[in-house]
Image (cartoon, rainbow, N blue to C red; front, side):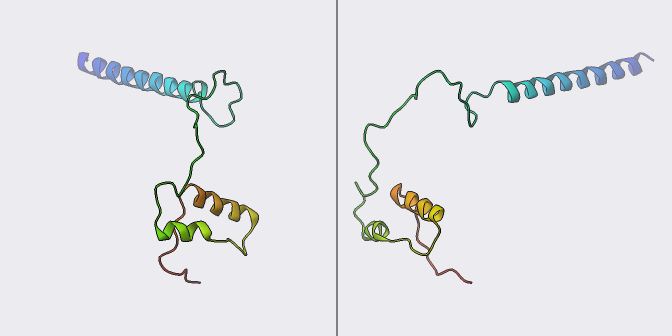
Length: 102
């Protein structure tokens, strides 16, 4: 009888701790996000600010970088063109190694 009571009490305590931990995790997720997208109530200024503009050919003078910088993106929509130009400007663009198969 005593063992049965202790087992029931132990399972009750485990469930209770699990529930408290779960509620604490939900509370943290909902109320303590300080950098979520669209947060307009931020009070401090930006911590780090770049002093100079990024140059994608500052230290890399290879032929591939020169070719990538001279590419003109034609025949695509404006959004895709802006994305590709951004990728080229910040050295994220990688040309295809093989042509795309249709």
